[in-house]
Image 1 (cartoon, one colour):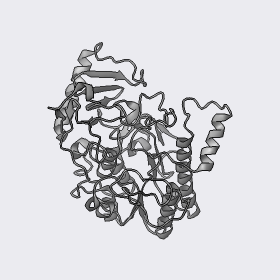
Image 2: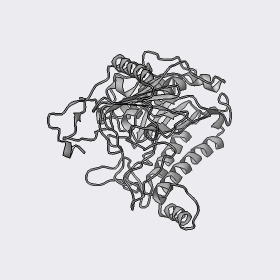
Image 3: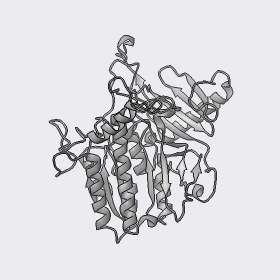
Amino acid sequence: MRFTDAYAACTVCSPTRAAVMSGKYPARLHLTDWIAGHRRPNAKLLPPDWRMYLPLEETTLAEAMKEAGYATAHIGKWHLGDPPYYPEHQGFDVNIGGDRYGQPASYFWPYANKQRKTPIVGGHEGEYLTDRLTDEALRFIDAHAAEPFFIYFAHYAVHTPLQAKEELIAHYRQKLDSGIDTGKQRCDVYAAMVHSVDESVGRIVAALDEKNLLDDTIIIFTSDNGGLTLPRLDGIPPTDNSPLRAGKGSTYEGGVRVPAIVRWPKRVPKGSVSHEPIISTDYYPTILELAGIPPKPEQHVDGLSIVPLFDGAETLPRDAIYWHYPHYHPGGATPYSAVRARDWKLIEFFEDGHLELYNLKEDLSEQHDLAAEKPDLAKRLRAQLQAWRESVGAQYPRPNPNYKPSGAK
Protein backbone atom coordinates (compact mmCIF):
# COMPACT_ATOMS: atom_id res chain seq x y z
CA MET A 1 0.00 0.00 0.00
CA ARG A 2 1.27 3.41 -0.97
CA PHE A 3 0.34 6.40 1.17
CA THR A 4 -0.11 9.76 -0.54
CA ASP A 5 -0.55 11.67 2.72
CA ALA A 6 2.18 10.21 4.92
CA TYR A 7 4.04 12.53 7.25
CA ALA A 8 7.25 12.68 9.23
CA ALA A 9 6.73 13.72 12.83
CA CYS A 10 9.13 16.62 12.30
CA THR A 11 10.68 18.66 9.51
CA VAL A 12 14.14 17.36 10.57
CA CYS A 13 15.61 13.97 11.38
CA SER A 14 16.24 13.24 15.08
CA PRO A 15 12.72 14.04 16.34
CA THR A 16 11.14 11.86 13.67
CA ARG A 17 13.43 8.95 14.50
CA ALA A 18 12.55 9.31 18.17
CA ALA A 19 8.86 9.25 17.24
CA VAL A 20 9.30 6.02 15.27
CA MET A 21 11.14 4.36 18.14
CA SER A 22 8.79 5.58 20.89
CA GLY A 23 5.35 6.05 19.35
CA LYS A 24 5.30 9.54 20.90
CA TYR A 25 5.25 13.00 19.39
CA PRO A 26 8.58 14.87 19.57
CA ALA A 27 6.81 17.58 21.59
CA ARG A 28 5.92 15.03 24.28
CA LEU A 29 9.50 13.73 24.36
CA HIS A 30 10.94 17.27 24.41
CA LEU A 31 13.20 16.10 21.57
CA THR A 32 12.23 18.69 18.99
CA ASP A 33 15.26 19.43 16.81
CA TRP A 34 18.04 17.58 15.07
CA ILE A 35 20.87 16.84 17.48
CA ALA A 36 22.70 19.13 18.29
CA GLY A 37 20.49 21.75 16.67
CA HIS A 38 20.84 25.01 14.77
CA ARG A 39 21.71 28.13 16.75
CA ARG A 40 20.83 31.74 15.98
CA PRO A 41 22.13 33.80 18.92
CA ASN A 42 20.60 37.04 17.60
CA ALA A 43 17.19 35.67 16.59
CA LYS A 44 13.96 37.01 18.05
CA LEU A 45 13.35 33.83 20.05
CA LEU A 46 15.54 31.33 21.87
CA PRO A 47 14.76 27.61 21.77
CA PRO A 48 13.62 25.84 24.94
CA ASP A 49 15.93 23.64 26.99
CA TRP A 50 15.15 20.62 24.85
CA ARG A 51 16.37 17.03 25.20
CA MET A 52 19.21 15.78 22.97
CA TYR A 53 18.72 12.05 23.47
CA LEU A 54 16.06 9.34 23.44
CA PRO A 55 15.43 8.55 27.12
CA LEU A 56 16.22 5.03 28.27
CA GLU A 57 12.93 5.07 30.18
CA GLU A 58 11.06 4.79 26.89
CA THR A 59 10.17 1.24 25.86
CA THR A 60 11.35 1.42 22.28
CA LEU A 61 9.88 -0.46 19.36
CA ALA A 62 13.06 -2.55 19.33
CA GLU A 63 12.59 -3.46 23.00
CA ALA A 64 9.00 -4.48 22.32
CA MET A 65 10.11 -6.71 19.45
CA LYS A 66 12.94 -8.20 21.49
CA GLU A 67 10.53 -9.00 24.34
CA ALA A 68 8.43 -10.90 21.81
CA GLY A 69 11.37 -13.08 20.76
CA TYR A 70 12.69 -11.20 17.75
CA ALA A 71 16.37 -10.81 16.94
CA THR A 72 16.87 -7.06 16.56
CA ALA A 73 19.34 -5.08 14.48
CA HIS A 74 19.97 -1.39 14.02
CA ILE A 75 21.83 -0.63 10.81
CA GLY A 76 22.82 2.87 9.71
CA LYS A 77 21.96 6.25 11.17
CA TRP A 78 20.91 6.56 14.83
CA HIS A 79 21.40 10.24 15.79
CA LEU A 80 19.51 9.98 19.08
CA GLY A 81 22.11 10.84 21.68
CA ASP A 82 25.56 10.12 23.06
CA PRO A 83 26.96 6.60 23.76
CA PRO A 84 24.77 5.85 26.82
CA TYR A 85 21.75 6.19 24.52
CA TYR A 86 23.08 4.20 21.56
CA PRO A 87 21.00 1.42 19.93
CA GLU A 88 22.62 -1.36 21.98
CA HIS A 89 21.05 0.26 25.06
CA GLN A 90 17.67 0.71 23.40
CA GLY A 91 16.68 -2.86 22.57
CA PHE A 92 18.94 -3.75 19.66
CA ASP A 93 21.04 -6.91 19.76
CA VAL A 94 23.26 -5.51 17.02
CA ASN A 95 24.26 -1.94 16.20
CA ILE A 96 26.08 -1.44 12.93
CA GLY A 97 26.91 2.13 12.01
CA GLY A 98 24.76 3.98 14.53
CA ASP A 99 26.22 6.72 16.73
CA ARG A 100 25.62 10.31 17.84
CA TYR A 101 26.11 11.84 14.40
CA GLY A 102 23.55 12.45 11.69
CA GLN A 103 25.85 12.06 8.71
CA PRO A 104 29.17 10.49 7.75
CA ALA A 105 32.24 12.57 7.05
CA SER A 106 32.31 10.83 3.68
CA TYR A 107 30.23 8.21 1.90
CA PHE A 108 33.45 6.51 0.84
CA TRP A 109 35.66 4.36 3.08
CA PRO A 110 36.94 5.07 5.69
CA TYR A 111 33.92 7.41 6.10
CA ALA A 112 35.82 9.57 8.60
CA ASN A 113 37.88 12.68 9.25
CA LYS A 114 39.57 14.25 12.30
CA GLN A 115 36.24 15.34 13.80
CA ARG A 116 34.05 12.42 12.75
CA LYS A 117 35.17 8.88 13.52
CA THR A 118 34.11 6.10 11.21
CA PRO A 119 30.61 4.82 12.01
CA ILE A 120 31.51 1.31 10.89
CA VAL A 121 34.60 -0.87 11.29
CA GLY A 122 36.45 -2.58 8.49
CA GLY A 123 36.06 -1.79 4.83
CA HIS A 124 38.25 -1.24 1.80
CA GLU A 125 39.30 1.40 -0.68
CA GLY A 126 36.42 2.57 -2.86
CA GLU A 127 33.72 1.06 -0.63
CA TYR A 128 30.47 3.09 -0.66
CA LEU A 129 28.59 3.41 2.62
CA THR A 130 25.11 2.67 1.23
CA ASP A 131 26.41 -0.57 -0.28
CA ARG A 132 28.33 -1.54 2.85
CA LEU A 133 25.31 -1.07 5.12
CA THR A 134 23.27 -3.20 2.74
CA ASP A 135 25.91 -5.93 2.94
CA GLU A 136 25.59 -5.84 6.73
CA ALA A 137 21.80 -6.10 6.54
CA LEU A 138 22.08 -9.11 4.26
CA ARG A 139 24.50 -10.77 6.67
CA PHE A 140 22.05 -10.27 9.53
CA ILE A 141 19.20 -11.73 7.48
CA ASP A 142 21.32 -14.73 6.56
CA ALA A 143 22.30 -15.32 10.20
CA HIS A 144 18.72 -15.07 11.50
CA ALA A 145 16.70 -16.49 8.62
CA ALA A 146 15.40 -19.34 10.79
CA GLU A 147 13.97 -17.08 13.50
CA PRO A 148 11.87 -13.92 13.76
CA PHE A 149 13.93 -10.81 13.13
CA PHE A 150 13.40 -7.04 13.20
CA ILE A 151 15.73 -4.72 11.29
CA TYR A 152 15.63 -0.96 11.63
CA PHE A 153 17.63 -0.09 8.51
CA ALA A 154 18.19 3.67 8.48
CA HIS A 155 20.40 4.65 5.57
CA TYR A 156 22.57 7.72 6.01
CA ALA A 157 21.74 8.48 2.38
CA VAL A 158 20.52 10.76 1.04
CA HIS A 159 21.80 13.12 3.72
CA THR A 160 24.72 15.42 3.08
CA PRO A 161 27.57 15.28 2.19
CA LEU A 162 26.27 14.86 -1.35
CA GLN A 163 28.55 12.13 -2.69
CA ALA A 164 27.85 9.24 -5.03
CA LYS A 165 29.60 6.64 -7.14
CA GLU A 166 31.17 8.19 -10.22
CA GLU A 167 29.57 5.77 -12.67
CA LEU A 168 26.11 6.65 -11.39
CA ILE A 169 26.82 10.37 -11.46
CA ALA A 170 27.95 9.97 -15.07
CA HIS A 171 24.76 8.05 -15.87
CA TYR A 172 22.53 10.87 -14.64
CA ARG A 173 24.74 13.60 -16.07
CA GLN A 174 24.32 11.93 -19.45
CA LYS A 175 20.55 12.03 -19.02
CA LEU A 176 20.72 15.75 -18.34
CA ASP A 177 23.07 16.38 -21.25
CA SER A 178 20.87 14.37 -23.64
CA GLY A 179 18.02 16.82 -23.22
CA ILE A 180 15.63 14.43 -21.49
CA ASP A 181 12.97 16.38 -19.62
CA THR A 182 13.68 15.85 -15.93
CA GLY A 183 11.41 18.66 -14.80
CA LYS A 184 12.92 20.50 -11.87
CA GLN A 185 15.13 17.55 -10.92
CA ARG A 186 18.55 18.69 -12.11
CA CYS A 187 21.10 17.35 -9.59
CA ASP A 188 22.99 14.35 -10.96
CA VAL A 189 24.79 13.64 -7.66
CA TYR A 190 21.57 13.49 -5.64
CA ALA A 191 19.94 11.29 -8.28
CA ALA A 192 22.91 8.93 -8.05
CA MET A 193 22.58 8.76 -4.26
CA VAL A 194 18.88 7.90 -4.58
CA HIS A 195 19.83 5.26 -7.16
CA SER A 196 22.09 3.54 -4.64
CA VAL A 197 19.33 3.51 -2.02
CA ASP A 198 16.99 2.04 -4.63
CA GLU A 199 19.53 -0.68 -5.40
CA SER A 200 19.82 -1.38 -1.67
CA VAL A 201 16.08 -1.93 -1.33
CA GLY A 202 16.16 -4.21 -4.35
CA ARG A 203 18.99 -6.29 -2.89
CA ILE A 204 17.13 -6.73 0.40
CA VAL A 205 13.93 -7.79 -1.36
CA ALA A 206 15.84 -10.20 -3.62
CA ALA A 207 17.60 -11.80 -0.64
CA LEU A 208 14.32 -12.30 1.21
CA ASP A 209 12.79 -13.81 -1.91
CA GLU A 210 15.74 -16.16 -2.39
CA LYS A 211 15.31 -17.44 1.17
CA ASN A 212 11.52 -17.82 0.74
CA LEU A 213 11.03 -15.14 3.41
CA LEU A 214 9.60 -12.36 1.28
CA ASP A 215 5.92 -13.08 1.86
CA ASP A 216 6.55 -13.60 5.58
CA THR A 217 8.33 -10.25 5.99
CA ILE A 218 6.63 -6.92 6.61
CA ILE A 219 8.52 -4.18 4.75
CA ILE A 220 7.93 -0.51 5.58
CA PHE A 221 9.69 2.16 3.53
CA THR A 222 9.52 5.80 4.60
CA SER A 223 11.59 8.92 5.40
CA ASP A 224 12.39 11.10 8.38
CA ASN A 225 11.72 14.46 6.69
CA GLY A 226 10.97 16.03 3.35
CA GLY A 227 13.37 16.31 0.45
CA LEU A 228 16.50 18.46 0.76
CA THR A 229 16.49 21.73 -1.18
CA LEU A 230 19.65 23.22 0.40
CA PRO A 231 22.63 23.41 0.05
CA ARG A 232 22.93 23.86 -3.68
CA LEU A 233 25.52 22.22 -5.91
CA ASP A 234 26.66 24.65 -8.62
CA GLY A 235 23.49 26.62 -8.04
CA ILE A 236 21.25 23.56 -8.38
CA PRO A 237 19.13 22.36 -5.43
CA PRO A 238 19.60 18.67 -4.53
CA THR A 239 15.94 17.93 -5.20
CA ASP A 240 12.60 19.59 -5.82
CA ASN A 241 9.45 18.63 -3.94
CA SER A 242 6.93 20.14 -6.35
CA PRO A 243 4.01 20.45 -6.13
CA LEU A 244 4.77 20.57 -2.39
CA ARG A 245 6.05 23.86 -1.03
CA ALA A 246 9.65 24.13 0.23
CA GLY A 247 11.59 21.20 1.74
CA LYS A 248 13.45 19.83 4.74
CA GLY A 249 13.66 22.29 7.60
CA SER A 250 10.66 24.31 6.41
CA THR A 251 7.21 24.94 7.83
CA TYR A 252 5.37 23.60 4.80
CA GLU A 253 4.35 20.28 3.22
CA GLY A 254 7.69 19.87 1.47
CA GLY A 255 9.32 19.60 4.88
CA VAL A 256 7.11 16.92 6.40
CA ARG A 257 5.17 15.01 3.72
CA VAL A 258 7.18 11.88 2.90
CA PRO A 259 7.02 8.63 0.94
CA ALA A 260 5.50 5.64 2.73
CA ILE A 261 4.99 2.13 1.39
CA VAL A 262 3.96 -0.97 3.33
CA ARG A 263 4.37 -4.41 1.77
CA TRP A 264 3.03 -7.67 3.21
CA PRO A 265 0.99 -9.76 0.77
CA LYS A 266 -0.66 -11.73 3.57
CA ARG A 267 -2.46 -8.62 4.83
CA VAL A 268 -1.78 -5.59 2.63
CA PRO A 269 -3.60 -5.51 -0.75
CA LYS A 270 -1.15 -5.40 -3.64
CA GLY A 271 -1.06 -2.12 -5.53
CA SER A 272 -3.40 -0.39 -3.08
CA VAL A 273 -3.29 3.34 -2.32
CA SER A 274 -4.45 5.21 0.78
CA HIS A 275 -5.10 8.94 1.02
CA GLU A 276 -5.56 8.90 4.79
CA PRO A 277 -3.00 10.99 6.73
CA ILE A 278 -0.57 8.88 8.73
CA ILE A 279 2.48 9.95 10.76
CA SER A 280 5.71 8.47 12.17
CA THR A 281 4.20 7.63 15.55
CA ASP A 282 1.83 5.18 13.85
CA TYR A 283 4.47 2.62 12.90
CA TYR A 284 5.02 1.35 16.45
CA PRO A 285 1.44 0.13 17.12
CA THR A 286 1.05 -0.97 13.49
CA ILE A 287 4.08 -3.26 13.60
CA LEU A 288 3.00 -4.75 16.92
CA GLU A 289 -0.47 -5.51 15.58
CA LEU A 290 0.77 -7.04 12.34
CA ALA A 291 3.23 -9.20 14.28
CA GLY A 292 0.53 -10.38 16.68
CA ILE A 293 2.22 -8.70 19.65
CA PRO A 294 0.00 -7.14 22.35
CA PRO A 295 -0.11 -3.34 22.12
CA LYS A 296 1.62 -1.06 24.60
CA PRO A 297 -0.89 1.82 24.75
CA GLU A 298 0.90 3.46 27.66
CA GLN A 299 3.98 3.74 25.41
CA HIS A 300 2.78 4.50 21.87
CA VAL A 301 0.29 7.06 23.17
CA ASP A 302 0.48 9.25 20.07
CA GLY A 303 0.43 6.45 17.51
CA LEU A 304 -2.54 4.81 15.86
CA SER A 305 -2.40 1.43 14.16
CA ILE A 306 -3.00 1.82 10.44
CA VAL A 307 -3.97 -1.84 10.05
CA PRO A 308 -7.66 -0.93 9.46
CA LEU A 309 -6.55 0.75 6.23
CA PHE A 310 -5.12 -2.56 5.04
CA ASP A 311 -8.48 -4.18 5.76
CA GLY A 312 -10.45 -1.74 3.65
CA ALA A 313 -11.15 1.23 5.92
CA GLU A 314 -10.75 4.60 4.23
CA THR A 315 -10.19 6.64 7.38
CA LEU A 316 -8.73 6.28 10.88
CA PRO A 317 -10.52 7.24 14.11
CA ARG A 318 -8.73 10.52 14.88
CA ASP A 319 -9.45 14.12 14.13
CA ALA A 320 -5.97 15.57 13.60
CA ILE A 321 -2.20 15.18 13.52
CA TYR A 322 0.27 17.71 14.90
CA TRP A 323 3.75 19.21 14.67
CA HIS A 324 5.72 21.42 17.07
CA TYR A 325 9.08 22.91 16.14
CA PRO A 326 10.20 25.67 18.56
CA HIS A 327 13.43 26.25 16.63
CA TYR A 328 14.96 27.94 13.59
CA HIS A 329 16.34 26.08 10.59
CA PRO A 330 18.27 27.13 7.46
CA GLY A 331 15.54 25.40 5.43
CA GLY A 332 13.25 28.30 6.26
CA ALA A 333 11.45 27.31 9.46
CA THR A 334 10.98 29.77 12.27
CA PRO A 335 9.50 28.50 15.56
CA TYR A 336 6.01 27.14 14.82
CA SER A 337 3.32 24.59 15.52
CA ALA A 338 0.89 23.10 13.01
CA VAL A 339 -2.21 20.94 12.90
CA ARG A 340 -3.77 19.03 10.04
CA ALA A 341 -7.47 18.28 10.56
CA ARG A 342 -8.76 16.39 7.54
CA ASP A 343 -8.23 18.71 4.55
CA TRP A 344 -7.34 21.76 6.64
CA LYS A 345 -3.90 22.74 7.87
CA LEU A 346 -3.22 25.58 10.28
CA ILE A 347 0.25 26.92 11.08
CA GLU A 348 0.92 29.13 14.11
CA PHE A 349 4.15 31.13 14.04
CA PHE A 350 5.61 32.00 17.43
CA GLU A 351 7.67 35.05 16.45
CA ASP A 352 4.60 37.22 15.91
CA GLY A 353 1.64 34.89 16.54
CA HIS A 354 0.28 35.08 13.02
CA LEU A 355 -1.65 32.20 11.50
CA GLU A 356 -1.74 30.61 8.06
CA LEU A 357 -4.61 28.37 6.97
CA TYR A 358 -4.63 26.11 3.91
CA ASN A 359 -7.06 23.69 2.31
CA LEU A 360 -4.69 20.93 1.22
CA LYS A 361 -7.29 19.21 -0.94
CA GLU A 362 -7.69 22.30 -3.11
CA ASP A 363 -4.28 23.90 -2.54
CA LEU A 364 -1.61 21.26 -2.07
CA SER A 365 1.12 23.80 -2.80
CA GLU A 366 0.00 26.04 0.08
CA GLN A 367 -0.19 29.17 -2.04
CA HIS A 368 -3.50 30.59 -0.79
CA ASP A 369 -3.59 31.50 2.90
CA LEU A 370 -7.24 31.50 3.98
CA ALA A 371 -6.79 32.59 7.60
CA ALA A 372 -8.28 36.04 6.94
CA GLU A 373 -11.16 34.62 4.90
CA LYS A 374 -12.09 31.95 7.45
CA PRO A 375 -11.31 33.49 10.84
CA ASP A 376 -13.72 31.24 12.77
CA LEU A 377 -12.11 28.07 11.42
CA ALA A 378 -8.63 29.46 12.05
CA LYS A 379 -9.62 30.34 15.62
CA ARG A 380 -11.08 26.88 16.25
CA LEU A 381 -8.01 25.07 14.89
CA ARG A 382 -5.69 27.35 16.85
CA ALA A 383 -7.56 26.49 20.05
CA GLN A 384 -7.29 22.80 19.15
CA LEU A 385 -3.56 23.18 18.52
CA GLN A 386 -3.03 25.01 21.80
CA ALA A 387 -4.97 22.34 23.70
CA TRP A 388 -2.82 19.64 22.13
CA ARG A 389 0.38 21.45 23.12
CA GLU A 390 -0.79 21.62 26.69
CA SER A 391 -1.78 17.93 26.69
CA VAL A 392 1.70 16.79 25.61
CA GLY A 393 3.62 19.29 27.75
CA ALA A 394 5.16 21.04 24.76
CA GLN A 395 8.04 23.42 25.41
CA TYR A 396 7.90 26.97 24.07
CA PRO A 397 10.59 29.27 22.72
CA ARG A 398 11.33 32.34 24.81
CA PRO A 399 12.20 35.96 24.04
CA ASN A 400 15.85 36.59 23.29
CA PRO A 401 17.35 39.51 25.26
CA ASN A 402 20.12 39.70 22.65
CA TYR A 403 17.74 40.00 19.70
CA LYS A 404 19.22 42.00 16.83
CA PRO A 405 16.87 42.32 13.83
CA SER A 406 19.76 43.00 11.45
CA GLY A 407 21.61 39.86 12.57
CA ALA A 408 18.75 37.50 13.29
CA LYS A 409 19.54 35.23 10.36
